[in-house]
Length: 489
Image (tube, rainbow, N blue to C red):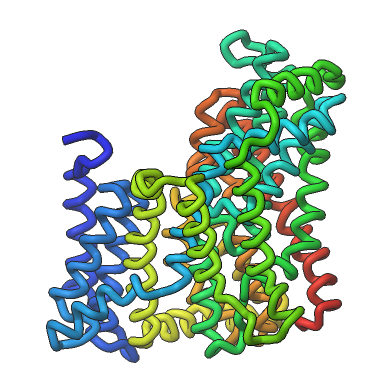
């Protein structure tokens, strides 16, 4: 078997043992039904398997779907149990991310993503700090239409960052990475969590958060694409503007002036030539998508012009296929999109039925009671919940696994403790991206940037901890004031 599909037998045996222990070895707690407890056993096993990388996440998702169906934990009738197990595939938010990943493939295929990066480089590239801002702004521009933060930060921005550092002779191989490459690598990486927090379509797990929040509040808090973007705008911009400066202080480059960077960027732009037909079409499609996601037609001509966010993404993909910017083979080859749809459907399905069967409410009550004993008000309790939620990511190698395992229960506990629903939702949503800063295995982008060897392990972890604090403070203070202005609390 190929390494990418091979079963890690030792880990698999341990996880099967864990599932059986929860299923049969631990008595069902008071207030929990047997089906809910058995589904929890399958859920914990799935999350543990994802963390341990027993198999690719898509393969684990298929196994989870099969186990839910054949064990009948959601319903005793086999046909209904099978329908329940497949119900996640009917969630529009899952298809929004899958379709958006397919759309983002065009950024790489046409070269538009690289062009945007080099345009910012030509504009800001007189100094190393300016190059840092060019990387950050490029990341920000690409974020709304690139739901794979790994593709954005690792596939588009990282090659640009490496080529710039190499052109200045700052490489790990030469031992000169501290001259400017280390700083640029850190900016390349830390722009990724910030941009991921700013848009629903900036990273794959964000729609999962939207779903959890809606279910926890009975749809009273509904984060549409526009609501999310508007709420995250000011704290996100503040964090993005502050980040290159903070890194410049924490990890200062030795080379401060880079007058040749603009020449380098212009040379790359000359190689790309003028905008091609495919790039112009792609720009037009992305502009249309942003208008539809923001809801401009409905604002101008009334609610009957409103277009569902997933339908808009499907329209964008259809236009790219009709125009020839993308071929159907391009869509079929976008394995990450199909993989995301499969594992997202499985995790959403399991989380949904854990909620329906009352397990989330039971666990959130446990958390709530534990915090109540500390005598904290809702503000202190919320701070504790957010801190524990964020820094628990040291034990996760997947943001999706972390969010699926903890978000719903922690949000429900915060609501029960009296926290305002919207600010708590937004802070936990932001923390779900901020936690990417912490480790070299925190998200898919981190091993790509860390693996280029510009930053040592110890330095990466120290900077990651510092940036998590900075970002959390920005979202709490700037975000809190901004949400007060918006009337969210």
